[in-house]
Image (tube, rainbow, N blue to C red):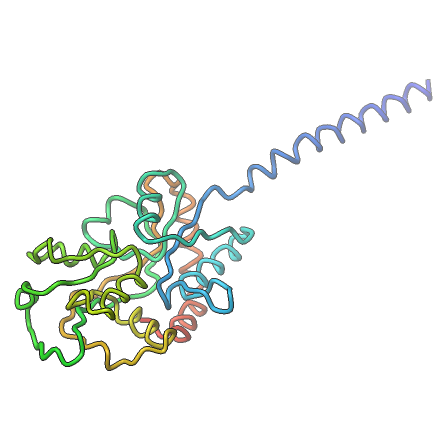
Length: 254
């Protein structure tokens, strides 16, 4: 009798252990984070420094992951147009930082704002351009970033489309402007200042001639992303107010 009781205990323990082993992969699967993250190189929001991806948006995202107990996830650095296509066409994707404009608001889910960006039209130095309305430069050519808010803002005007050059990245738009292949450049103030500092460009090479718009930037999630994920991210961001303000000061963003 004692032998069978001992055998039964051993069988029971083996059964429990087996159940625990079977449960482990399921628990691991439940903790797997389903979102794929995309960003572009657009300092000071996201850029490389000593081969490390940093920036206000990158640092904030990592703080949110930490707050939620999510292990650090891969961030895919791609041209803006590709990132925009991925978040528009693929489920469970996120792109940052994205300006939340009227035409985009219903297309995605949003966490933020991360910072506020001022978008300007920049002219070549000594251009002699002093304008109060964009219609005054409709005879000029302008560089924007494809599928970026700069393109959207220019398209909202009656700017002749044949005179708009859509670059795949901020670096390419800057290159077009520096090479004087275009007369004008649409870019954020913070992005331009960071590029001037990083690339050691002379600030006198860029003349701000018109404020296009002031827009808040967010982490944008694909429309199918579960609401609980988006809400959890927003809750974490709200809770990280002190760190958020410190990062804004560090990266000189509003």
